[in-house]
Amino acid sequence: MDRPESFSPVRRYIAYVSSLGTTQLHLRNPFVIACWSLAFPGLGHLLLSKYLRGYLLFLWEIFVNVNGHINLAILYSFTGRFQMAKDVLDINWVLFYIPTYIFAVWDAYRTTVDLNHQYILAAREDAEIKIFNISSIEINYLDKRTPWNAAGWSAVMPGLGQVLIHRIPAALFIIIGFIAISQQAKLLPALHYTLLGQFEYAKLILNPQWFLNSSSVYFFAIYDAYENTVSNNKLFDWEQTKFLKKNYQDKNFNMPFQKTDIQGD
Image (cartoon, rainbow, N blue to C red; front, side, top):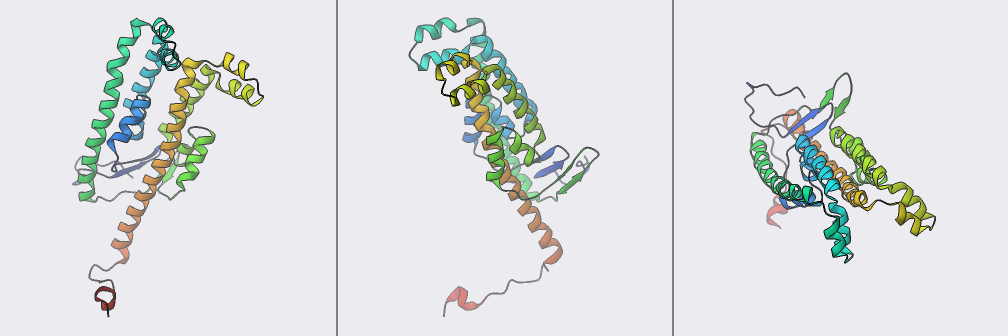
């Protein structure tokens, strides 16, 4: 759709269909979004389509975590090697980590609550949206897709499900991020030797500091693809209903029913 003009009588729109994707407001569970930021700062914000904030927190997490050796300390703590966990931590970086980590979780929760309020107000205005966008670089439109199909493609390669549902900013970031983390962790060579039964060699080449980042990104890609496909399907149904009511249903028409259906014989 065209960008809303400043003089438009509509104050809030439920969705915006652009060349790069479909951005929409809908009700979300704040605890779910906060849990994704708890798993990895920035992921909750990506679910909310708060891309710039999500990118910043994600890159911050990677930078500080690697320099502070925080994932290694977590690994040693979970395996009972507490002295090694204490020794490996870099105190020059650890104190940078805690405040921003807590902020990421709190801000994800707060932003979700705020956007839920904005959705309620936007739903009352019930503004029209343009479901088809064509530009010199891309075509995007609302359509119904199978959620498990999108989730399945992201399970094969994180980011492909987002490409399928035309969520380009998230797709690019997830694909680049997962490839970078996998390369640093030596994930694919370790998987290769694991499938060959060479478990000790796989353990030897795997970098645990980076490997612990990969699971959060992997499962987030699957969840994000599924959840946003469901949301896009609901948005398609909402717009289609508005179109049919406006163009094909007489406002004076009452749906027929039999008295026996209501009152019984």
